[in-house]
Image (tube, rainbow, N blue to C red; front, side, top):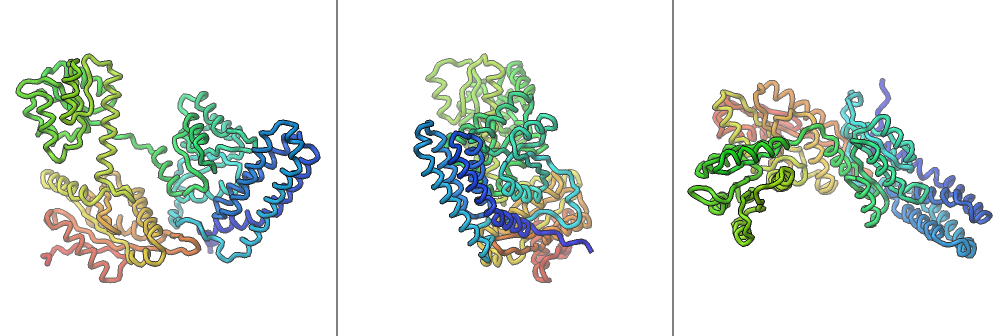
Length: 562
Protein backbone atom coordinates (compact mmCIF):
# COMPACT_ATOMS: atom_id res chain seq x y z
CA UNK A 1 0.00 0.00 0.00
CA UNK A 2 1.30 3.46 -0.91
CA UNK A 3 1.77 5.89 1.95
CA UNK A 4 -1.06 8.40 2.15
CA UNK A 5 -0.22 11.70 0.49
CA UNK A 6 -0.19 14.64 2.85
CA UNK A 7 -2.92 17.20 2.27
CA UNK A 8 -2.14 20.85 1.77
CA UNK A 9 -3.51 21.61 5.23
CA UNK A 10 -1.24 19.05 6.87
CA UNK A 11 1.84 20.38 5.08
CA UNK A 12 1.11 23.96 6.09
CA UNK A 13 0.43 22.91 9.68
CA UNK A 14 3.71 21.01 9.80
CA UNK A 15 5.61 24.04 8.52
CA UNK A 16 3.90 26.29 11.02
CA UNK A 17 4.71 23.96 13.93
CA UNK A 18 8.31 23.74 12.73
CA UNK A 19 8.58 27.53 12.72
CA UNK A 20 7.12 27.84 16.21
CA UNK A 21 9.38 25.05 17.49
CA UNK A 22 12.49 26.86 16.22
CA UNK A 23 11.59 30.20 17.82
CA UNK A 24 13.48 29.53 21.10
CA UNK A 25 16.70 28.82 19.17
CA UNK A 26 16.12 31.91 17.02
CA UNK A 27 15.62 34.02 20.15
CA UNK A 28 18.82 32.57 21.70
CA UNK A 29 20.78 33.57 18.59
CA UNK A 30 19.27 37.04 18.75
CA UNK A 31 20.25 37.46 22.38
CA UNK A 32 23.82 36.32 21.65
CA UNK A 33 24.02 38.82 18.78
CA UNK A 34 22.70 41.56 21.07
CA UNK A 35 25.45 40.80 23.59
CA UNK A 36 28.04 40.83 20.80
CA UNK A 37 26.72 44.21 19.61
CA UNK A 38 27.19 45.62 23.12
CA UNK A 39 30.83 44.49 23.03
CA UNK A 40 31.50 45.64 19.45
CA UNK A 41 29.02 48.39 18.41
CA UNK A 42 30.97 49.09 15.19
CA UNK A 43 30.72 45.52 13.85
CA UNK A 44 28.33 45.85 10.88
CA UNK A 45 27.88 42.11 10.35
CA UNK A 46 26.33 41.74 13.83
CA UNK A 47 23.71 44.35 12.99
CA UNK A 48 23.05 42.63 9.64
CA UNK A 49 22.50 39.28 11.36
CA UNK A 50 20.13 40.84 13.90
CA UNK A 51 18.15 42.46 11.11
CA UNK A 52 17.91 39.12 9.30
CA UNK A 53 16.48 37.45 12.42
CA UNK A 54 13.76 40.05 12.92
CA UNK A 55 13.03 40.15 9.18
CA UNK A 56 12.57 36.37 9.13
CA UNK A 57 10.31 36.44 12.18
CA UNK A 58 8.12 39.11 10.62
CA UNK A 59 7.70 37.45 7.23
CA UNK A 60 7.31 33.85 8.36
CA UNK A 61 4.89 34.64 11.16
CA UNK A 62 2.73 36.68 8.81
CA UNK A 63 2.58 33.80 6.33
CA UNK A 64 1.26 31.50 9.04
CA UNK A 65 -1.35 33.92 10.32
CA UNK A 66 0.61 34.80 13.47
CA UNK A 67 -0.01 38.52 13.28
CA UNK A 68 1.19 39.52 16.76
CA UNK A 69 4.51 37.70 16.39
CA UNK A 70 4.95 39.23 12.94
CA UNK A 71 4.38 42.70 14.39
CA UNK A 72 7.16 42.15 16.94
CA UNK A 73 9.50 41.13 14.14
CA UNK A 74 8.61 44.30 12.26
CA UNK A 75 9.21 46.39 15.37
CA UNK A 76 12.67 44.82 15.67
CA UNK A 77 13.44 45.77 12.07
CA UNK A 78 12.48 49.38 12.81
CA UNK A 79 14.71 49.48 15.89
CA UNK A 80 17.71 48.28 13.87
CA UNK A 81 17.06 50.63 10.95
CA UNK A 82 16.80 53.58 13.36
CA UNK A 83 20.07 52.55 15.05
CA UNK A 84 21.81 52.22 11.67
CA UNK A 85 20.84 55.78 10.78
CA UNK A 86 22.69 57.24 13.79
CA UNK A 87 26.19 58.61 13.63
CA UNK A 88 28.98 56.89 15.57
CA UNK A 89 28.71 59.02 18.72
CA UNK A 90 24.93 58.66 18.88
CA UNK A 91 25.26 54.89 18.48
CA UNK A 92 27.60 54.67 21.44
CA UNK A 93 25.19 56.70 23.59
CA UNK A 94 22.13 54.63 22.62
CA UNK A 95 23.62 51.14 22.31
CA UNK A 96 22.43 49.92 25.74
CA UNK A 97 18.85 51.14 25.25
CA UNK A 98 18.73 49.69 21.73
CA UNK A 99 19.90 46.24 22.79
CA UNK A 100 17.51 46.24 25.75
CA UNK A 101 14.59 47.05 23.43
CA UNK A 102 15.57 44.27 21.02
CA UNK A 103 15.95 41.76 23.84
CA UNK A 104 12.49 42.70 25.10
CA UNK A 105 10.97 42.14 21.66
CA UNK A 106 12.69 38.75 21.38
CA UNK A 107 11.33 37.72 24.79
CA UNK A 108 7.80 38.67 23.69
CA UNK A 109 8.21 36.64 20.49
CA UNK A 110 9.24 33.59 22.50
CA UNK A 111 6.29 33.91 24.89
CA UNK A 112 3.82 34.31 22.00
CA UNK A 113 5.27 31.31 20.16
CA UNK A 114 4.96 29.12 23.24
CA UNK A 115 1.34 30.19 23.65
CA UNK A 116 0.64 29.44 19.98
CA UNK A 117 2.13 25.95 20.31
CA UNK A 118 -0.30 25.23 23.13
CA UNK A 119 -3.27 26.44 21.10
CA UNK A 120 -5.60 23.85 19.60
CA UNK A 121 -6.60 26.09 16.68
CA UNK A 122 -3.26 26.46 14.95
CA UNK A 123 -4.76 27.23 11.54
CA UNK A 124 -7.10 30.00 12.64
CA UNK A 125 -6.72 32.98 10.37
CA UNK A 126 -5.62 31.11 7.25
CA UNK A 127 -7.61 32.03 4.17
CA UNK A 128 -9.66 29.36 2.34
CA UNK A 129 -7.46 27.34 0.00
CA UNK A 130 -7.72 24.22 -2.10
CA UNK A 131 -5.49 21.59 -3.65
CA UNK A 132 -5.89 21.19 -7.40
CA UNK A 133 -3.61 18.18 -7.69
CA UNK A 134 -5.48 15.15 -8.95
CA UNK A 135 -4.92 11.74 -7.43
CA UNK A 136 -2.88 9.52 -9.65
CA UNK A 137 -0.05 11.21 -11.37
CA UNK A 138 -0.38 14.85 -12.34
CA UNK A 139 2.87 15.44 -10.44
CA UNK A 140 4.62 14.19 -13.59
CA UNK A 141 2.92 16.73 -15.87
CA UNK A 142 5.11 19.50 -17.34
CA UNK A 143 5.27 22.47 -15.02
CA UNK A 144 6.09 26.09 -15.74
CA UNK A 145 9.39 26.89 -14.06
CA UNK A 146 9.35 29.68 -11.49
CA UNK A 147 12.36 31.01 -9.59
CA UNK A 148 11.70 32.54 -6.19
CA UNK A 149 14.18 34.54 -4.14
CA UNK A 150 13.28 34.85 -0.46
CA UNK A 151 15.66 34.44 2.48
CA UNK A 152 12.70 33.53 4.70
CA UNK A 153 12.77 29.82 3.86
CA UNK A 154 9.75 28.59 5.90
CA UNK A 155 7.51 31.28 4.37
CA UNK A 156 8.86 30.51 0.91
CA UNK A 157 8.20 26.80 1.37
CA UNK A 158 4.59 27.51 2.34
CA UNK A 159 4.06 29.48 -0.87
CA UNK A 160 5.86 26.88 -2.98
CA UNK A 161 3.56 24.10 -1.73
CA UNK A 162 0.51 26.08 -2.79
CA UNK A 163 1.94 27.10 -6.20
CA UNK A 164 2.71 23.47 -7.00
CA UNK A 165 -0.97 22.70 -6.53
CA UNK A 166 -1.61 24.89 -9.58
CA UNK A 167 0.97 23.24 -11.82
CA UNK A 168 4.01 25.44 -11.18
CA UNK A 169 7.48 24.08 -10.46
CA UNK A 170 9.17 26.48 -8.04
CA UNK A 171 12.82 26.68 -6.99
CA UNK A 172 13.70 29.05 -4.14
CA UNK A 173 17.03 30.86 -3.76
CA UNK A 174 17.90 32.50 -0.46
CA UNK A 175 20.35 35.00 -1.94
CA UNK A 176 19.93 37.42 -4.85
CA UNK A 177 23.36 36.47 -6.20
CA UNK A 178 22.33 32.81 -6.49
CA UNK A 179 19.10 33.78 -8.21
CA UNK A 180 20.92 36.05 -10.63
CA UNK A 181 23.33 33.27 -11.65
CA UNK A 182 20.45 30.82 -12.19
CA UNK A 183 18.40 33.27 -14.26
CA UNK A 184 21.36 34.06 -16.51
CA UNK A 185 22.27 30.40 -17.05
CA UNK A 186 18.77 28.93 -17.38
CA UNK A 187 16.01 31.57 -17.57
CA UNK A 188 12.69 30.63 -15.90
CA UNK A 189 9.16 31.43 -17.03
CA UNK A 190 8.85 34.03 -14.25
CA UNK A 191 10.60 35.31 -11.11
CA UNK A 192 9.07 35.96 -7.67
CA UNK A 193 11.39 38.33 -5.81
CA UNK A 194 11.49 39.64 -2.25
CA UNK A 195 12.63 43.24 -1.85
CA UNK A 196 14.39 43.33 1.51
CA UNK A 197 17.36 41.16 2.42
CA UNK A 198 19.69 41.08 5.46
CA UNK A 199 21.87 43.91 4.18
CA UNK A 200 18.98 46.26 4.85
CA UNK A 201 19.02 47.80 1.37
CA UNK A 202 16.89 47.20 -1.69
CA UNK A 203 18.85 44.25 -3.01
CA UNK A 204 15.81 42.64 -4.59
CA UNK A 205 14.93 45.55 -6.86
CA UNK A 206 18.59 46.22 -7.62
CA UNK A 207 19.11 42.60 -8.71
CA UNK A 208 16.09 42.72 -11.01
CA UNK A 209 17.21 46.01 -12.54
CA UNK A 210 20.64 44.49 -13.18
CA UNK A 211 19.13 41.45 -14.90
CA UNK A 212 17.05 43.67 -17.15
CA UNK A 213 20.20 45.48 -18.27
CA UNK A 214 22.07 42.24 -18.96
CA UNK A 215 19.35 40.18 -20.67
CA UNK A 216 17.68 40.97 -24.02
CA UNK A 217 14.49 39.18 -22.94
CA UNK A 218 14.38 39.01 -19.14
CA UNK A 219 11.64 36.93 -17.49
CA UNK A 220 8.65 38.75 -15.96
CA UNK A 221 9.06 39.60 -12.28
CA UNK A 222 6.59 39.65 -9.40
CA UNK A 223 7.74 41.37 -6.20
CA UNK A 224 6.61 40.18 -2.78
CA UNK A 225 7.35 42.11 0.38
CA UNK A 226 6.18 42.92 3.85
CA UNK A 227 6.40 46.61 2.90
CA UNK A 228 3.29 48.52 1.83
CA UNK A 229 4.85 51.96 1.39
CA UNK A 230 5.05 54.09 -1.74
CA UNK A 231 8.86 54.00 -1.93
CA UNK A 232 8.98 50.18 -2.04
CA UNK A 233 6.28 50.00 -4.69
CA UNK A 234 7.92 52.71 -6.79
CA UNK A 235 11.30 50.98 -6.66
CA UNK A 236 9.62 47.75 -7.76
CA UNK A 237 7.99 49.45 -10.75
CA UNK A 238 11.13 51.32 -11.75
CA UNK A 239 13.22 48.14 -11.66
CA UNK A 240 10.81 46.44 -14.07
CA UNK A 241 8.45 44.56 -11.75
CA UNK A 242 5.11 43.72 -13.32
CA UNK A 243 3.20 42.95 -10.12
CA UNK A 244 3.52 43.56 -6.37
CA UNK A 245 2.05 41.53 -3.52
CA UNK A 246 2.21 42.29 0.19
CA UNK A 247 3.08 39.35 2.45
CA UNK A 248 1.46 37.06 3.42
CA UNK A 249 0.58 36.43 -0.23
CA UNK A 250 -2.76 34.88 -1.19
CA UNK A 251 -1.83 31.98 -3.46
CA UNK A 252 -4.92 32.21 -5.69
CA UNK A 253 -4.17 35.87 -6.51
CA UNK A 254 -0.51 35.10 -7.22
CA UNK A 255 -1.52 32.18 -9.46
CA UNK A 256 -3.86 34.39 -11.48
CA UNK A 257 -0.99 36.82 -12.10
CA UNK A 258 1.43 34.03 -12.98
CA UNK A 259 -1.11 32.54 -15.39
CA UNK A 260 -1.35 35.84 -17.22
CA UNK A 261 2.43 36.31 -17.34
CA UNK A 262 3.33 32.79 -18.45
CA UNK A 263 0.50 32.04 -20.86
CA UNK A 264 1.77 30.62 -24.12
CA UNK A 265 -1.31 31.76 -26.02
CA UNK A 266 -0.77 34.62 -28.44
CA UNK A 267 -3.29 37.44 -28.00
CA UNK A 268 -5.86 37.65 -30.75
CA UNK A 269 -4.96 40.42 -33.25
CA UNK A 270 -6.92 43.66 -33.05
CA UNK A 271 -9.63 43.95 -35.69
CA UNK A 272 -9.71 47.37 -37.35
CA UNK A 273 -12.37 48.55 -39.82
CA UNK A 274 -10.89 51.23 -42.13
CA UNK A 275 -13.54 53.49 -43.69
CA UNK A 276 -12.18 55.76 -46.42
CA UNK A 277 -13.51 56.56 -49.88
CA UNK A 278 -9.97 56.79 -51.27
CA UNK A 279 -8.86 53.17 -51.86
CA UNK A 280 -5.15 53.90 -51.99
CA UNK A 281 -5.18 55.84 -48.74
CA UNK A 282 -7.25 53.16 -47.05
CA UNK A 283 -4.90 50.45 -48.30
CA UNK A 284 -1.84 52.37 -47.10
CA UNK A 285 -3.15 52.71 -43.56
CA UNK A 286 -4.34 49.12 -43.67
CA UNK A 287 -0.86 47.88 -44.59
CA UNK A 288 0.71 49.83 -41.73
CA UNK A 289 -1.70 48.29 -39.24
CA UNK A 290 -1.36 44.78 -40.67
CA UNK A 291 2.42 45.06 -40.49
CA UNK A 292 1.94 45.66 -36.76
CA UNK A 293 -0.03 42.40 -36.51
CA UNK A 294 -3.57 43.72 -36.75
CA UNK A 295 -6.39 42.43 -38.98
CA UNK A 296 -8.08 45.04 -41.16
CA UNK A 297 -11.17 45.25 -43.31
CA UNK A 298 -11.58 48.04 -45.88
CA UNK A 299 -14.82 49.86 -46.58
CA UNK A 300 -14.92 52.49 -49.34
CA UNK A 301 -18.66 53.02 -49.46
CA UNK A 302 -20.22 54.36 -46.22
CA UNK A 303 -23.58 52.79 -47.10
CA UNK A 304 -22.05 49.36 -46.34
CA UNK A 305 -21.27 50.21 -42.71
CA UNK A 306 -24.09 48.13 -41.16
CA UNK A 307 -23.11 44.92 -42.92
CA UNK A 308 -19.40 45.54 -42.25
CA UNK A 309 -19.97 46.04 -38.51
CA UNK A 310 -22.13 42.93 -38.21
CA UNK A 311 -19.82 40.68 -40.25
CA UNK A 312 -16.39 41.90 -39.12
CA UNK A 313 -17.10 42.82 -35.45
CA UNK A 314 -14.22 45.33 -35.22
CA UNK A 315 -12.39 46.47 -32.10
CA UNK A 316 -12.08 49.96 -33.60
CA UNK A 317 -13.24 51.99 -36.63
CA UNK A 318 -10.66 54.20 -38.35
CA UNK A 319 -12.65 56.68 -40.39
CA UNK A 320 -12.03 59.51 -42.84
CA UNK A 321 -13.70 62.80 -41.96
CA UNK A 322 -14.92 63.74 -45.42
CA UNK A 323 -16.58 61.20 -47.72
CA UNK A 324 -19.24 61.31 -50.45
CA UNK A 325 -22.91 60.95 -49.42
CA UNK A 326 -22.15 61.52 -45.75
CA UNK A 327 -19.45 62.94 -43.52
CA UNK A 328 -17.56 61.06 -40.87
CA UNK A 329 -19.55 63.00 -38.26
CA UNK A 330 -22.84 61.71 -39.67
CA UNK A 331 -21.55 58.16 -39.93
CA UNK A 332 -20.30 58.31 -36.35
CA UNK A 333 -23.76 59.43 -35.15
CA UNK A 334 -25.33 56.55 -37.09
CA UNK A 335 -23.03 53.99 -35.45
CA UNK A 336 -23.68 55.41 -31.99
CA UNK A 337 -27.43 54.82 -32.44
CA UNK A 338 -26.88 51.04 -32.68
CA UNK A 339 -26.88 49.59 -29.12
CA UNK A 340 -24.31 46.88 -29.91
CA UNK A 341 -21.77 49.49 -31.05
CA UNK A 342 -22.45 52.38 -28.69
CA UNK A 343 -19.03 51.91 -27.02
CA UNK A 344 -17.09 50.97 -30.17
CA UNK A 345 -14.03 53.28 -30.48
CA UNK A 346 -14.13 55.57 -33.52
CA UNK A 347 -10.96 57.41 -34.57
CA UNK A 348 -11.06 60.10 -37.26
CA UNK A 349 -8.11 60.23 -39.64
CA UNK A 350 -8.21 63.36 -41.78
CA UNK A 351 -6.09 66.17 -43.18
CA UNK A 352 -8.41 68.62 -41.42
CA UNK A 353 -6.26 70.90 -39.26
CA UNK A 354 -8.89 73.32 -37.99
CA UNK A 355 -9.09 72.78 -34.23
CA UNK A 356 -12.70 73.95 -33.99
CA UNK A 357 -13.75 71.42 -36.64
CA UNK A 358 -11.77 68.67 -34.93
CA UNK A 359 -13.39 69.37 -31.57
CA UNK A 360 -16.81 69.44 -33.21
CA UNK A 361 -16.13 66.03 -34.75
CA UNK A 362 -15.08 64.65 -31.37
CA UNK A 363 -18.37 65.74 -29.80
CA UNK A 364 -20.30 63.14 -31.80
CA UNK A 365 -18.52 60.33 -29.99
CA UNK A 366 -15.09 59.92 -31.58
CA UNK A 367 -12.21 58.73 -29.41
CA UNK A 368 -9.50 60.73 -31.19
CA UNK A 369 -8.74 62.92 -34.20
CA UNK A 370 -5.53 62.08 -36.06
CA UNK A 371 -4.17 64.43 -38.72
CA UNK A 372 -2.85 63.21 -42.06
CA UNK A 373 -0.09 62.62 -42.83
CA UNK A 374 0.71 60.58 -39.73
CA UNK A 375 3.86 58.70 -38.85
CA UNK A 376 3.30 54.91 -38.96
CA UNK A 377 4.38 54.42 -35.34
CA UNK A 378 1.98 57.14 -34.20
CA UNK A 379 -0.91 55.53 -36.07
CA UNK A 380 -0.12 52.09 -34.69
CA UNK A 381 0.14 53.39 -31.15
CA UNK A 382 -3.07 55.45 -31.30
CA UNK A 383 -5.06 52.54 -32.73
CA UNK A 384 -3.60 49.82 -30.49
CA UNK A 385 -4.16 51.73 -27.24
CA UNK A 386 -7.82 52.34 -28.01
CA UNK A 387 -8.45 48.86 -29.40
CA UNK A 388 -6.97 47.31 -26.26
CA UNK A 389 -9.23 49.48 -24.11
CA UNK A 390 -12.19 48.25 -26.12
CA UNK A 391 -11.10 44.66 -25.60
CA UNK A 392 -10.91 45.25 -21.87
CA UNK A 393 -14.34 46.89 -21.72
CA UNK A 394 -15.86 44.18 -23.87
CA UNK A 395 -14.34 41.52 -21.63
CA UNK A 396 -15.83 43.18 -18.55
CA UNK A 397 -19.21 43.23 -20.27
CA UNK A 398 -19.23 39.56 -21.31
CA UNK A 399 -17.34 37.88 -18.46
CA UNK A 400 -18.30 36.93 -14.94
CA UNK A 401 -16.41 38.96 -12.35
CA UNK A 402 -15.67 36.09 -9.95
CA UNK A 403 -14.63 33.25 -12.26
CA UNK A 404 -13.59 35.10 -15.43
CA UNK A 405 -15.85 32.81 -17.48
CA UNK A 406 -18.36 34.10 -20.02
CA UNK A 407 -21.60 35.39 -18.53
CA UNK A 408 -25.24 34.43 -19.16
CA UNK A 409 -25.83 37.05 -21.85
CA UNK A 410 -22.80 36.09 -23.90
CA UNK A 411 -23.58 32.36 -23.59
CA UNK A 412 -27.02 32.93 -25.11
CA UNK A 413 -25.55 34.99 -27.98
CA UNK A 414 -22.80 32.45 -28.64
CA UNK A 415 -25.23 29.55 -28.64
CA UNK A 416 -27.43 31.33 -31.18
CA UNK A 417 -24.55 31.96 -33.59
CA UNK A 418 -23.11 28.46 -33.05
CA UNK A 419 -26.45 26.85 -33.84
CA UNK A 420 -26.75 28.93 -36.99
CA UNK A 421 -23.30 27.73 -38.08
CA UNK A 422 -24.14 24.12 -37.22
CA UNK A 423 -27.31 24.28 -39.34
CA UNK A 424 -25.39 25.72 -42.30
CA UNK A 425 -22.55 23.22 -42.08
CA UNK A 426 -24.54 20.18 -40.95
CA UNK A 427 -22.52 20.19 -37.72
CA UNK A 428 -23.13 18.86 -34.21
CA UNK A 429 -23.34 20.81 -30.98
CA UNK A 430 -23.51 19.63 -27.35
CA UNK A 431 -24.75 21.79 -24.49
CA UNK A 432 -23.71 20.73 -20.99
CA UNK A 433 -25.28 22.26 -17.89
CA UNK A 434 -23.63 21.54 -14.55
CA UNK A 435 -24.57 22.64 -11.06
CA UNK A 436 -22.60 22.35 -7.79
CA UNK A 437 -24.47 20.01 -5.45
CA UNK A 438 -25.73 21.39 -2.13
CA UNK A 439 -23.96 24.69 -2.71
CA UNK A 440 -26.19 26.63 -0.33
CA UNK A 441 -25.03 24.32 2.44
CA UNK A 442 -21.40 25.18 1.63
CA UNK A 443 -22.12 28.90 1.96
CA UNK A 444 -24.13 28.42 5.15
CA UNK A 445 -21.53 26.15 6.77
CA UNK A 446 -18.22 27.67 5.66
CA UNK A 447 -19.16 31.17 4.55
CA UNK A 448 -19.39 32.88 1.18
CA UNK A 449 -15.59 33.28 0.72
CA UNK A 450 -15.25 29.50 0.88
CA UNK A 451 -18.17 29.15 -1.55
CA UNK A 452 -16.47 31.53 -3.94
CA UNK A 453 -13.31 29.41 -3.76
CA UNK A 454 -15.36 26.37 -4.81
CA UNK A 455 -16.71 28.22 -7.85
CA UNK A 456 -13.26 29.53 -8.80
CA UNK A 457 -11.77 26.04 -8.44
CA UNK A 458 -14.44 24.52 -10.70
CA UNK A 459 -13.94 27.27 -13.27
CA UNK A 460 -10.17 26.67 -13.29
CA UNK A 461 -10.66 22.91 -13.65
CA UNK A 462 -12.95 23.41 -16.64
CA UNK A 463 -10.51 25.84 -18.26
CA UNK A 464 -7.52 23.56 -17.73
CA UNK A 465 -9.16 20.39 -19.03
CA UNK A 466 -11.47 21.39 -21.88
CA UNK A 467 -10.50 22.23 -25.45
CA UNK A 468 -9.74 25.81 -26.40
CA UNK A 469 -12.72 25.86 -28.78
CA UNK A 470 -15.17 24.74 -26.08
CA UNK A 471 -17.06 27.69 -24.65
CA UNK A 472 -17.27 27.71 -20.84
CA UNK A 473 -19.59 30.07 -19.02
CA UNK A 474 -21.12 30.76 -15.64
CA UNK A 475 -24.84 30.69 -16.25
CA UNK A 476 -25.76 32.04 -12.83
CA UNK A 477 -25.08 31.25 -9.18
CA UNK A 478 -23.46 27.83 -8.97
CA UNK A 479 -24.58 26.78 -12.48
CA UNK A 480 -22.15 26.51 -15.40
CA UNK A 481 -22.60 25.88 -19.13
CA UNK A 482 -20.25 24.23 -21.63
CA UNK A 483 -20.86 24.40 -25.39
CA UNK A 484 -18.91 21.71 -27.25
CA UNK A 485 -18.78 21.52 -31.03
CA UNK A 486 -18.45 18.40 -33.19
CA UNK A 487 -18.39 15.79 -30.42
CA UNK A 488 -20.56 12.73 -29.99
CA UNK A 489 -22.78 12.21 -26.97
CA UNK A 490 -20.50 9.39 -25.83
CA UNK A 491 -17.42 11.61 -26.07
CA UNK A 492 -19.05 14.48 -24.23
CA UNK A 493 -20.32 12.14 -21.50
CA UNK A 494 -16.82 10.69 -21.02
CA UNK A 495 -15.26 14.16 -20.80
CA UNK A 496 -17.79 15.56 -18.35
CA UNK A 497 -17.74 12.45 -16.17
CA UNK A 498 -13.97 12.77 -15.95
CA UNK A 499 -14.34 16.36 -14.83
CA UNK A 500 -16.99 15.34 -12.30
CA UNK A 501 -14.76 12.67 -10.77
CA UNK A 502 -11.75 14.97 -10.55
CA UNK A 503 -13.77 17.82 -9.03
CA UNK A 504 -14.99 15.46 -6.30
CA UNK A 505 -11.32 14.77 -5.39
CA UNK A 506 -10.48 18.41 -4.68
CA UNK A 507 -10.00 19.30 -1.03
CA UNK A 508 -11.19 22.73 0.07
CA UNK A 509 -9.97 24.34 3.25
CA UNK A 510 -11.38 27.06 5.46
CA UNK A 511 -9.53 27.71 8.69
CA UNK A 512 -9.16 24.33 10.40
CA UNK A 513 -12.04 22.76 8.46
CA UNK A 514 -11.81 21.11 5.07
CA UNK A 515 -14.41 19.60 2.78
CA UNK A 516 -15.19 18.36 -0.73
CA UNK A 517 -17.90 19.17 -3.26
CA UNK A 518 -19.54 17.43 -6.21
CA UNK A 519 -21.56 18.55 -9.21
CA UNK A 520 -24.35 17.13 -11.32
CA UNK A 521 -24.85 17.67 -15.03
CA UNK A 522 -27.14 17.30 -18.02
CA UNK A 523 -26.17 17.00 -21.70
CA UNK A 524 -28.24 17.69 -24.82
CA UNK A 525 -27.05 17.56 -28.44
CA UNK A 526 -28.08 19.19 -31.69
CA UNK A 527 -29.38 17.96 -34.18
CA UNK A 528 -30.93 15.12 -32.15
CA UNK A 529 -32.72 17.85 -30.18
CA UNK A 530 -33.91 21.02 -31.92
CA UNK A 531 -31.79 24.09 -31.36
CA UNK A 532 -34.53 26.13 -29.70
CA UNK A 533 -35.02 23.32 -27.14
CA UNK A 534 -31.35 22.58 -26.47
CA UNK A 535 -30.89 24.56 -23.25
CA UNK A 536 -34.23 23.43 -21.88
CA UNK A 537 -33.38 19.80 -22.62
CA UNK A 538 -29.96 20.06 -20.94
CA UNK A 539 -31.57 21.72 -17.92
CA UNK A 540 -34.16 18.96 -17.66
CA UNK A 541 -31.40 16.34 -17.81
CA UNK A 542 -29.58 18.21 -15.02
CA UNK A 543 -32.76 18.13 -12.94
CA UNK A 544 -32.97 14.36 -13.46
CA UNK A 545 -29.38 13.98 -12.28
CA UNK A 546 -30.21 15.92 -9.12
CA UNK A 547 -33.32 13.89 -8.46
CA UNK A 548 -31.57 10.54 -8.88
CA UNK A 549 -28.88 11.05 -6.30
CA UNK A 550 -26.60 13.96 -7.41
CA UNK A 551 -22.93 13.65 -8.43
CA UNK A 552 -23.94 12.16 -11.79
CA UNK A 553 -24.44 13.15 -15.44
CA UNK A 554 -27.66 12.49 -17.39
CA UNK A 555 -28.29 12.62 -21.14
CA UNK A 556 -31.32 14.52 -22.37
CA UNK A 557 -34.30 12.45 -23.49
CA UNK A 558 -35.17 12.62 -27.16
CA UNK A 559 -38.87 12.61 -26.32
CA UNK A 560 -41.12 15.67 -26.07
CA UNK A 561 -40.42 18.10 -23.27
CA UNK A 562 -43.28 19.06 -20.92
